[in-house]
Amino acid sequence: MDARIQQSVVVNLSNRPAPVHTGPFVIGIDPTTQSPNINYATPRPGAVITAADVDGLVQAFRAADRTPRLEYVAGCAPELESLLSAAGFAVEARHTYLCCRPGTLEIPATPDRYTLLTPDDDELRAALIGAQHEAFGGEPVATPADVARMRRSQEAGGFAVMAVTGDTCAGGGGAVPPADAVSEVAGIAVCAPHRRLGLAGAVTADLTRRLFAGGTEVAWLEASGEDSWRVYTRVGYRPAGQRLYMSMR
Image 1 (cartoon, rainbow, N blue to C red):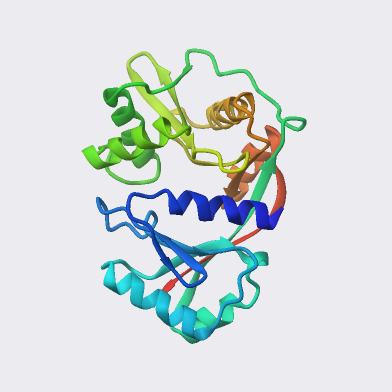
Image 2: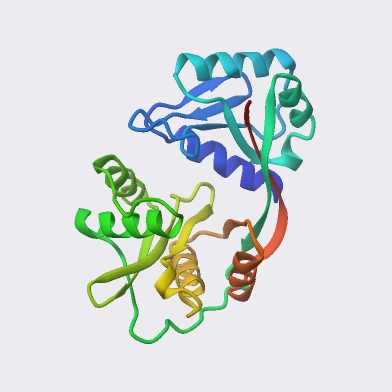
């Protein structure tokens, strides 16, 4: 499973607006943002990687005026961490990734007073992005580039779901366009006043259902804490491997 998940990341980054391919790596460059959470690299699964390859990767990041940073499935490049450390990278985080298949998905009831919708115009997209930013501790606003990024993902086959009560977007999430029947579910967020009601699980399950209805075979996501772990396992996700985040000091 590690190789299949890692390859889906390679494809996702290769579909960014201005990808850079250097040696065994692909950097997903988005010219509209400097965010290292969007502009990062990953290795191709099974590739032989050398110190010279890492040096070339750093130079490519510098040429693109981006912070050198990687996200990858650790088991697909076991030698890479030591090479990156020697080049001046540091570990940001180690996260477990979980997978769901159609046979394990459990779909809970949507909490009363809430409706799950697809944001199918830019006003709704902006409302969802603003709620996500707020839930993650940022300002509840969406830039035109943020909205365009979500629209582009949907047009390429990805999904977005927002939880609405009245005129308020309480949260939501998304799923990237599937690659070889594999897709990542990400950005699951619920604003503080709407937490502990089951919305995160309902959103996660609805996104996953939509993926499977379209032919996706494996949905995957990351759990970074005990609360999110409980949410995801309750709707049918199971631990499958480890992902590593590293960036230049």
